Image (cartoon, rainbow, N blue to C red; front, side):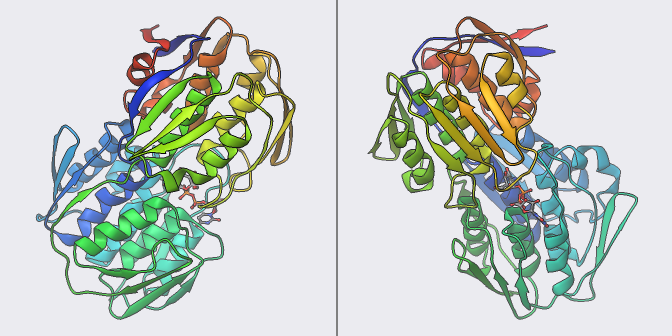
Amino acid sequence: MEKLKIEGGYPLNGVVRITGAKNAVLGLIPAAVLCGCVNTLDNVPDIDDVDQIVSILESLGANISRKKDLLIIDTRDQISYDCSPYEEEIGAMRASYYLLGALLGRYHKAIVPLPGGCAIGDRPIDQHIKGFEALGASVSIKHGQVMMEADELVGTDIYLDVVSVGATINIMLAAVLAKGVTTIENVAKEPHIVDVANFLNLMGAKIKGAGTDTIRIKGVDHLHGCEYSVVPDQITAGTYMMAAAATGGNVLIKNVIPRHMDAVSAKLKEMGADITSEGDGLRVIGPEHLKCCRVKTLPYPGFPTDLQQPMAVLMTIADGNSIINESIFESRFKYVDQLRKMGADITINGRVASIVGVEKLSATRIAATDLRAGAAMVVAGLVADGTTTVSNVHFIDRGYENLEENLRSLGAKIERVDV
Ligand code: UD1
């Protein structure tokens, strides 16, 4: 079992380059199935979730090769629409649900085990299914498998009852090859929604409105191969911004789209950090003392729920009383017990965390309870007094490429140890 050992108290200084976005590439790889041709993605992060989706697609019949951050996906051969033999692998990740839209779109048939992912609250897929049914698929769930079949897929108007990233992308995937026009209302607007739409359009799809509340898709008969570069990871960038601010460091975070970081930058500035744009980078200079603030997680362009956990760490050492209102996932405070072990003063009341800043966190043994909580534990270790060990590192490896190498290059005292 591997753990991260972190000696806290060293400000981060230097330059870090952000990889392509996990949540984008996990939509782009299944999207490539739709065209039945060869696609090349670059800026692909080297993370466990990418390995996992690649391995599932290879098992289904795709030929995929990787050269550094290039991924070449060949789906010319028949891909199996029956994913039931891979229940364990598919159940280990959330984004495997994109196989539903991609396989339904290409074959009008799909059998896909229900997805897994971080245990952060109720994560139904009713809106995905509502969209598939509206396009003409019959859908049933038996023995943990979603089974779908359609004679043909026909465009229609779909209104999402909740703003869902997964449902928005999945319905787009199913609709690009459908007959006629599909309109999806009340869609998510995250940068990775726009990224998947851009990739599909480069393959010949006709999607308009990605990044607004309404997406309109005019079905086409076929798609063709293309080369596409994955959008920079907004969540990874935010994690490094917070680590820089928390440690009172001075870090240039390169390969970001500064506009994607506006909600995070605004809050870090409120807490006293100095943030400036430098080309495709953001320089974050942390203050001597962080100030308290209030954060409510919201769909993009609001403050991302995936950065709520690292943000909480900053609040534990900020002057005054900070508040987090988690409006997306009701169980996303499981990690606070770990921070309490370090001396944090946090009170949870339903979806609201009230955090009274303490002088310092004190190092101890803590565990990642999920992927983003893992990143938060690392930030906690960086600011704590003494040596922290973080277990369940496998959660962090799902979504962060070379986290400890990058942090070490910025001056952190962090190493991976085998226990
Ligand atoms: C995706 C991201 C995850 C991020 C989340 C919110 C991936 C692989 N994961 O997760 O990192 O935290 O977006 O930005 O991209 N909901 C329903 N019915 C549905 C679908 C969703 O009620 O059919 C609800 C969920 O319970 C949640 C909210 O909608 O309260 C948002 O969920 P959604 O945007 O779908 O999140 P995921 O796609 O699971």
